[in-house]
Image (cartoon, rainbow, N blue to C red; front, side, top):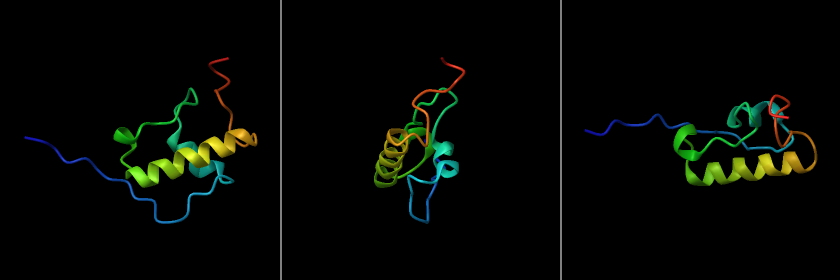
Length: 69
């Protein structure tokens, strides 16, 4: 029997300038958590990934964590 996964829903706009919200979707090493684990819809996950990549590009978020360096 399959168990249902808990779905996470983001009600408001995903902004790349808000690192506190984006850090929830990144591991300790700085990798983006996959969709099957974080429970987002595919559209929401694409928006989160795009926001994380934009934040990394303008140096709001690091590409890799300090612990990995």
